[in-house]
Image 1 (cartoon, rainbow, N blue to C red):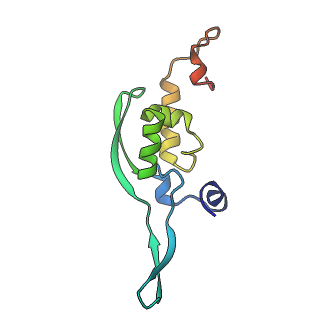
Image 2 (cartoon, rainbow, N blue to C red):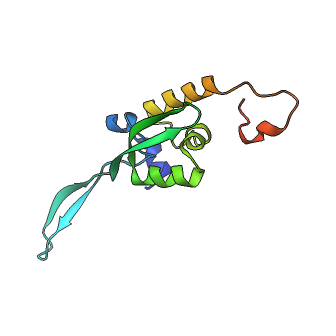
Image 3 (cartoon, one colour):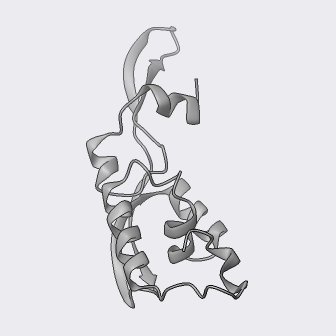
Amino acid sequence: MNGAMDMLGRAAMNRAKRGIYVGKQVRFGNNVSFSKRRTRRTFQPNVQTKTFYSKILDREIQLRVTAKAIRCIQKAGNFDTFILEKEHLTQDSDIAQKLRKEMLCKLPPAPKDEKVWTKFPYY
């Protein structure tokens, strides 16, 4: 099983809680030599240390993120949009949840009568 179904059966890695891994985990497999002899090996997630700028928090944040997380942040547009809108991708990360709460506290309250805040429906 791959992807979302795989995450349902497993708990998040401890190091995934300290960064944004977007569901990537350590995988196990075999090294297969020319003689077809199999030896066990691990496939580690491609983790990078990257600095992101948050416009809402007005500061830079250095995080350990996977290559997939970097692509997801770029697709979302910016770091703030990724943290606020893609909650299902950051649910296993303690630091992402902490940043999300901090961002929600800094945002101004939503106007009651205007439809400007349709991009962030949870305000």
